[in-house]
View (cartoon, helix red, strand yellow):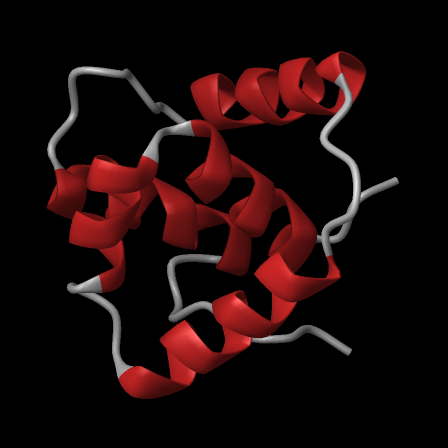
Length: 88
């Protein structure tokens, strides 16, 4: 089972480099450090994991045509609308 932070990292990798970069540009430095550290830990993105993460984000309201700000809003729903952080 993936943590919220792992799901966020997987999702950002799945949506493509250009959109990911635009979303990262909207984050503060603490969020970027947190998510970047999680990127480095990812070793496998199996089709099953990708499908599960895609499903979770659709349930949160994500649509592929959303812009970066809207996508970041949906992404933060994993963290109860707060900034991305490591949940202990």
